[in-house]
Image (cartoon, rainbow, N blue to C red; front, side, top):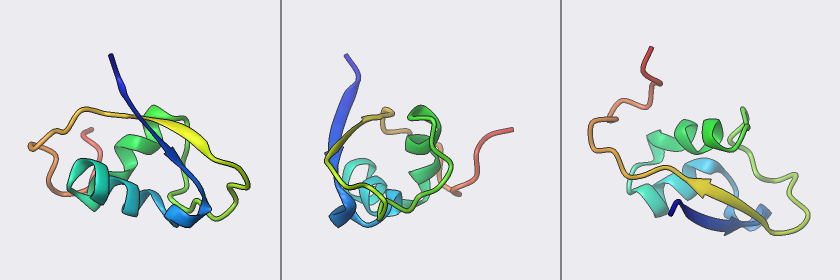
Length: 67
């Protein structure tokens, strides 16, 4: 089963979510891709939103999506 997290504007950005949930802020783009997002800014969220989380991947260390 895939992990999820509920976020609001108070979570500020996907950087913060990735740092908290994946222990690596540079993996924000993985959360974004999984949830059909392109912007790490969460300030437009007016209600709590549940996001799917990717599994922790220690090989993703540079914050750049694999080509």
